[in-house]
Image (cartoon, rainbow, N blue to C red; front, side, top):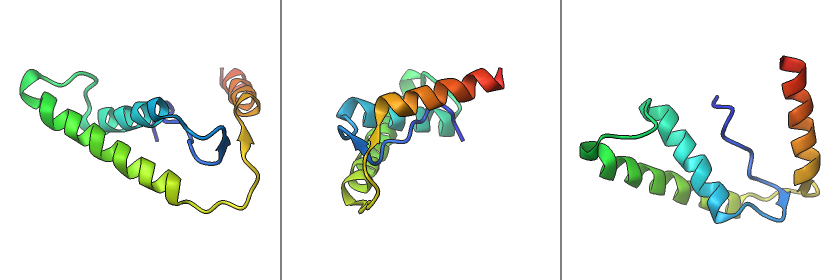
Length: 87
């Protein structure tokens, strides 16, 4: 899976609209194999990003999670430690 797509569920504060859009963009880029679509494909590319963001938003709002919310800074430090071990 694409490493740039971050987990957005169960954080305090909740995921922002910018985070949802960024993850949707990364997902569509991964699926399409391009970071910048041609002019001919720009509309369908953007529609896909919007559709994925809508689905992600519905998912995040609909999840019922009993675990306490995670702390963003603690998760960032864990990710940095994993990155340092990799390389």
